[in-house]
Image 1 (tube, rainbow, N blue to C red):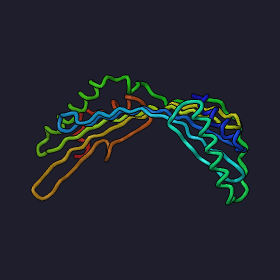
Image 2: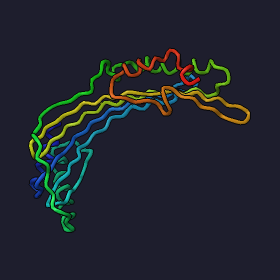
Image 3: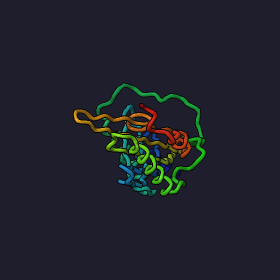
Length: 218
């Protein structure tokens, strides 16, 4: 993937940019949702692309494409330089980039358990059990629970010879109970409203200690 980012940078430089950098991003996501012990949604997605920015004078140009190929990445760099050149027709104040040490490194989210390796059946069973526990409380009409996971890889290249990669894993979810009365509706959620999401693997979900969710906001 570094090669695609490098091609985008080279495309920008060949089109006249004095500086350029590019990022290739590939991301997977997975979301499960459950209502009253029925799995009502399963969404799994994977997408990617390369984004590049180019500097001409004091003006920036940006361009991106979802086509991960050498030719498309190089063209994206050229398009970014063209946009920067057009922007330079109305130039801003002089721009001087900060002098930073060149880095070639990798960073990864610390995690213990790959959330995408956990079987879908186990995740679904957890959500069904959670909503069953919530429904066991008198007065509850709607019991909802969800899980969401992201796995993101990034590759960064600059014309200053930076080459940095990242692997970011994020996990989270939540649940809510809705009680309906004659004159009002009350909703309570756990671990917090709209769920809780963190960098980390499936251990994030296990740490929520779902064994007693209905007592969290009573």
